[in-house]
Amino acid sequence: MTTLSQDELKTLVGQAALKYVVPGEIVGVGTGSTVNKFIDALASIKDQIKGAVSSSVASTERLQALGIRVFDANEVAELAVYIDGADEIDHQGYMIKGGGAALTREKIVAAQSRQFVCIADDSKLVKTLGTYPLPVEVIPMAAQRVMRQFAAMGAQARLRLRNDAPLVTDNGQHLVDVTGLQISDPLVFEAEVNQWPGVVTVGVFAFQKAQICLLGTVDGVRTLTF
Image (cartoon, rainbow, N blue to C red; front, side, top):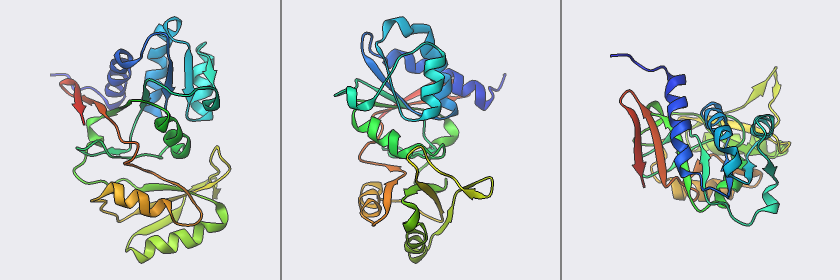
């Protein structure tokens, strides 16, 4: 039996997501390597949609390069569907997102959408969230204090760097990555951390959870509904 590579699994779920795109509508598009496969697949039906709302500069550039019109989120009242990946997803559809540093805009677009379809390979499915480092977007002046708050919870937090300097998000903020967590109640955790002064967005997606997950497996695409 031929084993599909992780890249091939991403291609499979990216193509499978096309059936959730509503013809004549504007589609919400996430960020990341799996979403890039979806964007490439979306180009094959671009004449059937009005365009997209994108969650990052990188996705916007890829969409536009393929001839897909990108709308500002403020121009669109509601989206039929948002397609995005996840760093982790549990069996209730709660996720950790933000490995690609776009978590705030991803959460905004997800909140505008009637349905969230997560596309991922089966390595992302977990029993409890927290193995993957949790990204938290913070206002720079609050970074050290937020990191101390996580340390008080028994977790380890570090500033995400790029070229030996703090990574700056599309929103001009910094990211803290947190390890050593077991997030047994994602709704409570998200609500609590989002209240910390200086936190822009925590990368737990519980209030904007997935309703469907298309999971790439060795046996093909497995559909989970939540």
